[in-house]
Image (cartoon, rainbow, N blue to C red; front, side, top):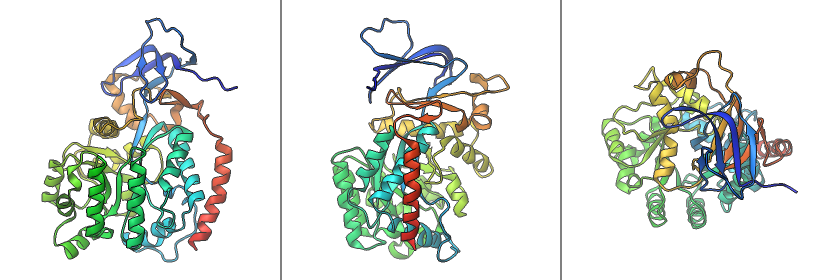
Length: 426
């Protein structure tokens, strides 16, 4: 019989407050449950079943969250070359990602979600904002992902990528899937990008977001082609179109990338309560440009755009590339890294409470204090140091191993599903 615990006691660790960066050598009590609390011992705990973990020499802080992920890309690693070598961003989409998403089915989606959730957990990520697409397996796809994430113990905010690129019938299926999912779980209304979303679909999506108190999650000006299409077909730029349609009115809206914006669009974004998510490594990989926060507000957070599930690496990449192009320093990098928590809390989403923690065994050869934390954050601490991860007050990673699911079996099944996916892509 599996014994459940109402509390976890982290003994003899060093707790780092994620907001103040204060270091405190202490024991820490972690309460189980979606709204569980953490507290420092000193009061009597009666009637509780407590699991004790020795954290001597280890550091404890709030776990991490991903502002923009793509579960559907999880089984792409190592796949065959596309039918045509892409020569630009639109061809990358056409010959790689739009070929892959059309080949997804429920079994492949489930495997993709499980391996993504496992990777997130082992990297200290306990909350994921995901943007999913499977045009020939739309119905029920979000619930498949949600249940897989729940199995592993990773919290989530999902959306389906609605688009007219595969025809109006599939776009309508995306709208129905979105409305159905949001009637049962927290989530967002997903749109691909302006250049694949027509006026009717855009307006219907805004209506769903408004009616269900949600927001729009959309790729914005990731490539200059998005702007060119918008100017040609709508005689306005992308951010202007989104503002006119009502996308930017929602504080829950997420605008991914936002690379190719002019001064007026930056001013529009700055006046909006919507959030921007930066995906530096994906932008570098696709050669689409560099993010620049000039003229924007401070609602900027980090995502991985399906490249991987390691937010510490994502933050480092944003700094190393970004400080050559914009005003991003140590403090600003950390602020964007942690901004996703403010997005979730300010908008009333659950699953990112204070009882989501990461324990890391950081064998630093130099002093580690509040005063030099940011330097260690950028040049020292990595996912390899993550030993234990607690999500909603429950232990999901222990001694670097996921304990909620059978990782060996899941990876074995994923390899079979990857071969199926690659075969279907042919």
